[in-house]
Length: 41
Length: 470
Image 1: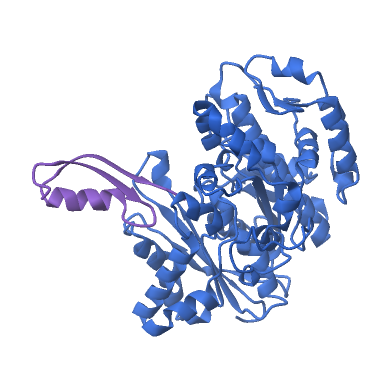
Image 2 (image 1 turned 60 degrees about the vertical axis):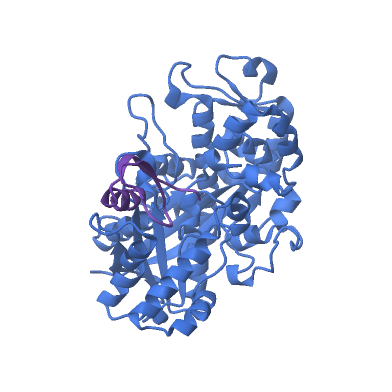
């Protein structure tokens, strides 16, 4: 599904972190162009 | 290793509706949407509403968080009570006087009427002797002329903050009022601590700041040391100080550092202080206004905690039961909690059910939920309970009971360092002395990634134990 797609990975501090999302997206063949984790509290 | 105790802890609130619009979010959003400003102003709470608000009553120690009434708390408020066993809720008029009284550089200015009101109310305060009331008189001036000075910031009808240097962003008026408000609230909490504990101010050797402010100039933006500034303002003439910075998690590392200094014999008494974060006032106001709620981020917190050698009665800080989130640990909520809540207890063979109270991030959900941020403490407690079940300390069916019995509703303002375990410290002292608890665990988490220097979060935990055996 993500093969060859560009992905912006924005994680949440109480959920899944940005780097974890990015690692999964990369493994699925995505081109991760931005990674960050944010705090919404 | 000699035992160390927490012998006193206090916390205060300053109700500052006029300053709410100077929080980072309203400052940006109200400038872009002036039509919202009117609703913002109309949605600010009165002092009586803020003082009666049940989470604030839990904050100043008139009730335990588990005694909070059913939500919505705004609708279930009792009578306003300004003072509590841990501190007080200070009205804005008086707080403006306090800002002037702790302003060493005469940057905060008041109209003659506001100065007179601030001085009169502070003169009648139980801690009046500790305040430099002459400074309030000196702060009075032609407020319209001062507001017209370069880069001055109009805070309220009768209050203006000057900048210190017009071309230094770190010394801009909105930065300086953030720092001065932190100094004032922390000083007030420390003065309450001195008053309530009855200790000689000269007996405090060191003061550690653990708040969110960034004090400095353009060449050293986070230079810091609010600890020493507050020590001076509170009359601790024989103390020095420094700050521990770790985003919202700073209190627990500060407590561990302070306790280590006492345990090692470097100092006898160390105070840990923090002030409120003005930048976070009104942070979630859009969610509140959208649901016709009042702007609930209208108070600044202040805290003070005293650490000293074992006095035979106060709760002990178990320096051998400290949890830390290692660089190599995972960043998911469960991995962070494993590092903080499971590992240090497992290391000592302590079951998670041996802990009477877990104090984690105790943000008030009535503030966070309308903006879509959910119930932070509930999420944390469910994670801790699930880890307890995974470890085999409880059955899966007992998760809800674990959350109710060992957790609590959030009641802290959304100034993260206050919410991150720090706000429970005076309650923990009660529970571990006059109450029936034997062990309380403090857990703090911080979002390091926000500063864009690494992708990590951080956290630290420490066990507090009833004196004479947990």
